[in-house]
Structures are given as C-alpha cells and as structure tokens.
Length: 476
Image (cartoon, rainbow, N blue to C red; front, side):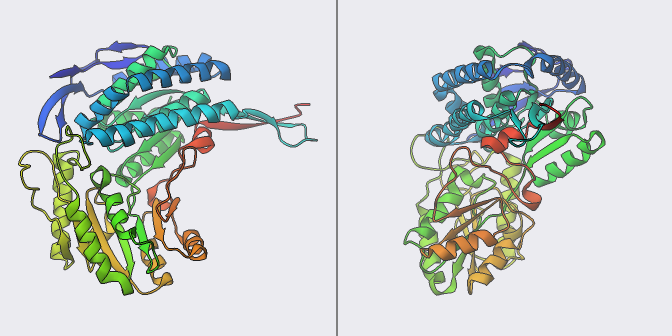
C-alpha cells in the first residue's frame, strides 16, 4: 500500500491535523493500492494562512523569475514523464500508451504555452496613446483550485500554471479518487524551487475541503472543473464572499454529420466519444445523422464500436480502459438500461461486462440508435463509452436538436461544404466548435455556455482569469 497521507503546505510535506484516511482504488482491478488523508477546515485554514502570507512577496515577483521557475518546472516534468503517465494509468484507468501520448502530453503542452503567453503578456500599458489613463493587470490573490479525475494533469496545469504566472498563490485540491498525480505534481513544484506558501496541496472531498475552500473569507477566487451539480453548490458557497468563481462543467455535445461528410466521419465520431472511456466533458455524445445516410451510418458505427478493445489500463496498445469508480460504473449502467427501457435501439455494447474482464469497472462501447432528444441518454451527461445516434431532416432541424440542451461546451460538424460548416458553427450555442475533426490548438480558450460553465482556460484568457484590472487616472 502506497502511503500518501501528507499534505504539501508552506513548502513542506506535513501530517494532517486530524486523521481521516481514504483508500485509492485501482479501477482496473478494484483493489486498494494507496491511502491518502481527507483534509479538514483546520488544514484549509493553515494552508490559506501561508498562501496569504506568501502572496505579499510572490505577487511582486518579476516576470523573469517566474519564467525561470516555470521553465525549470517543465524540465522536471519532462524528466518524470513516464512516472506521471504510470500514476494516471493506475489511479484513473487510462491505458498506459494513452496516458502518455494524450494525458501527460496535454500537461506539457499547457506548461509550454503558458510560458510563451507569460513572456508576451503586457501587465501594464497605457489606455490609449494620448491618454493619461494607465491599465494595470494585478494578481487576484489566494486561489482555491479544484480539479477532476478524468484529465488530472491536464486540468492541474490549466489552473496552477496560469495562477503561478499571474502572481497568485494557491491551494490545490485534486480529486480524492485520482489524487496521486496531483501529489506528484506537488513534488515537481517543490523540486523546481517555488517559494514556500505559493503552492499548497490538500486532499479532500467536495463536501469537506471543497466547501471549505469555496466559502473561505481569505480565498479570492475559486477555479473548479467538474460536474454541473457541484458547480452550482460551489457558486452558492462562494456567494457570501463575492469571490470570483471560474467554472468548467459538464457537456452533452452534438456531432452533426451531413450526407456530404468525408467517408470516415461516422467512424471517427465513434472513436472520439469512446476515447478516455467516454470520460471527457466535451465528447460528442449525440451523433446527429442526415436521414439519407442514416442506415449506412448505423452500420458503420456499430462495426466501429465492436472493433474497439476493452482491457486493463496496464496493457500497452490501442484500447480503452475502465471507467473511474464503482459509483460511476453503476450510473453508466443505469443509463444504458434506461435507454433500452425508453425504446432506443441497442446496436452495440450493452450493460453486460466485456468478456474476460470480471473485475474492474469495464463497460463495452455502447451505441443506441432511434434516439429522441427527450430520452435520458440524450439529455443527461453519461460520462462513459455510450453514444446516441439521432436522425435529422435538414440543417435547421439538426441545429435545433443540438442546441436543445442545458449544456453548451463543445459541438461538432462534419460537411465538405465550407460555407455550411461556418454557418452551422455560428449557430451552435457552445464555447467550442470542431469542424471536420479539427482540434483546438494550445493557447486557445476552453470553456462553455450556460450550464457548462462561465470561465475560459488556456492562453491569455486563462491568464486573465487570475488577474484583476486596475485603471490609474493621471499616470502622466
């Protein structure tokens, strides 16, 4: 059993004030393999006090020093790359190759890009050439950073790096069910030599440490990635202190495939949703197919789903691993059963476990057709390897179906008609649009509309989330 019961506070690994152990489960075999501590309000108060003290000096650190420390952090990150990939594979079930090429790589991409943005960012500037008004960007203060289990290092780097670059201090709470990659990241911070108190880590759950952070009087900002339900609670907890709340929440993306889409559009759409075992908030979980190619698309989708292998995360190769936990497994299976009960046609997968995988939270790649937008599988965020295929009549019909949701994170369109692609993209009510399989580049903003959140992460937008804007009149 790996012992990870300490917290990182004020530049040291310290014991929690009260003992409250939690076992970390390997989702590939359901075995406990590590133990952490769940923090309390006393732990949070201690970390916040040190972060508040450290802010006095760190907020005034020059850009050159911050760049030096972040570049050193990146060097250490790259040196420990394989260790990071292995840790995430163990804790959240990402197959080892995917954990390296996608999960770990995403963290390096974000660190690289934020270093570039920091070098170029102008923290002080004249309002206009002939104006005596001066605009200053200043760090917002002490930040509470709450990250999810599905893309652990990706989300940690999207929050911690811009917070450091902007001059903020922080307390990170990784997901308690996938906490070890966050603790490894704390070791990298420590080795890089960031001043004591600038970065702190406390493990805990949402009802405990999460609530303590979001309601704390001395925390100036909360950045949270996770479920919409939790995002609403965090907003309520933060309301009394009027702190800034940056939320990146759930999604129910639509993928419109027109009859003129490229030949592999359906198969690529299936692969997209099934990657990371369906545990991505911007995954295109509703595939809308023009009626003239609907039957062909069903055949291709079911064939593709049946090709996808499901296996242990520890194995190399092209396959998907388990979902994260028993709770998540039960939720997904319940939604698959609801699709069958509500009359959707099951053409691939189903609620039974994959052959040969008795232990572990494994789910077959599952596809439903003849789905209507009022079914649970079309409305709720499943967060598993489950795709709903919905037919549509025309462009307006497809856009109406896609936008008929409380979410608005990422939507997709497949067509060789460039004008139509742009027209559809403008009509989507979502923070991101992906045309013909193109992906977002590092430094572009990521976030959603409506109940998918209210902030943006990445690039200058990610930096600005951690900055206050001051206008000084009469500068010259």
